[in-house]
Image (cartoon, rainbow, N blue to C red; front, side, top):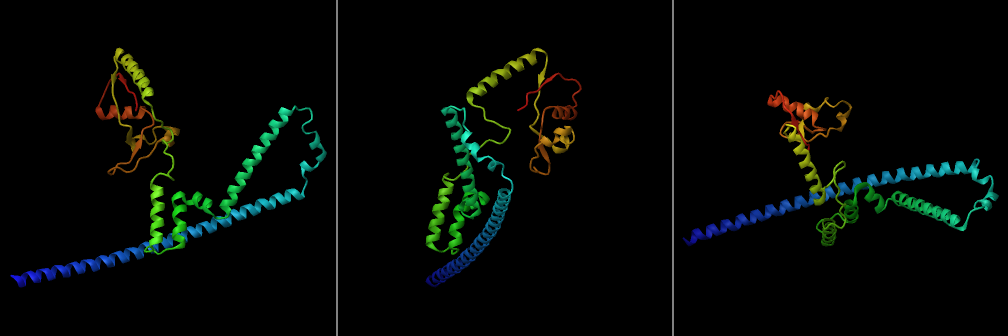
Length: 272
């Protein structure tokens, strides 16, 4: 019995050693793969940034060239320099101050715009963030300096950076999709009262209420709206069916009549 127990224990230890060895091999392979992907990603970003920097510098050079050509030609502003002295002739001090304030604001905006363009052309964090986003602009500098993912310093800095990104400090402000809105409780109360009145009026005149889905099969909607067909929003493939959001209640009502074999109906229908 003792001999059997020792054999079982020896077998268990051997199995654990093999599992540990396999796990170490897997971790090493995973680290190598991640480092390779990181290196390729950094190289791609560097190439894009270099190309963007060259394009921006070429644009700035072209603008400078055109400005120099205009300066060498006729300059309408240089025709009457003495006229500047009479620029504010007949104006009150308040009018002069207002004009000068607007000019100063315009010059400040132009200077800020030039500064932003120069920052992008320089290939710094501004350009990186504008092309790849805030997350990449925060992580790329760390990986571009050190690609060894076993480096404790790098791992610590990456962990801090990712925690900062996930904590909401650099997340975009949430927005509702275009063409939609939220309704607050007081607004919903008004809508509910209005719909109740509308339904009572419909019922008073003998109408019955129906409802249809907010989406239909795409083949049902396509070609039915004429020029407005471009306003149809396609949905992802759902179980083999191509679907799209309805545009109004006309085509869904026609499909409702065909599917349910309704001959005569005085219907009321309030879309969602």
